[in-house]
Image (cartoon, rainbow, N blue to C red):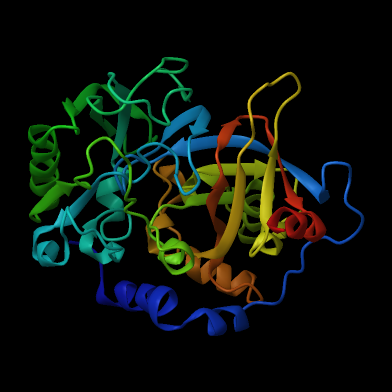
Length: 367
């Protein structure tokens, strides 16, 4: 593998060993907006949702979504980081029946081999029926939007394509693998064997053995485990923060480089850090009869070398994003984005507004 021990050591120190108090000390306080709540109990600027995505296989590219249905608190986007490419030499740390959070060094992913993972694009589609799932009302660009899908016997089809190294675009006639069904052992073996051959390292495609339920997420953060005892989180990025960072470093940056589930716009740069420890509510677009979700923002996102490459813009080249963040924003450290957990089930779609709930409204709900 192409990862270095230095990368692993830095990531471990930032994510595991430093501890919450020291992490807070690395950045200034970001108090949330103050003032009177409006009629809906929110304060400050509202943000609008500009992008939704899931990453079915840890380290591979996203599936763009138009909407997401969350059926229960604690869930994440359907199939987000549901599968991962576990290194065989880490197999002793993994059990399908007793899953625990594992550091990304244990997987073939954007952190451990960014060049290889960036060289592939993928299609991922959920089809089938048995048990209702949170994909029921999801929309996918170019695919299964609007279909009533169910989960128990669903097929989870993935197709890999090679990217043009000069443009980053998918080479249409260069299907590298698939389609294969990751809901089956044979499909997962095919994906593991493929990446074992490509990487020169023995890996296996793994998932939780919990039937149709998406109960475990192979995410990069242990924040969900620390806060709620659950690996499942939502990663949110503020487009205004990315634009300011782009201007500061003089390089065009796309929010997708930071592998978010949810991109918002309409906030001031870095305002999302003031959401940590607070509740965010979703306001539906006019005319929608669906109930909006609510999010508890639990931590900032520490960045690693895995976002050094943008697969869709190879002309930019490889960037040391943690170093750039620390150089240009020493008051923040190597952080960009926030992690949140779903505290109220509902429906989320492009164009929805997200807003900070006033503390008085939060306390009233708890009584």
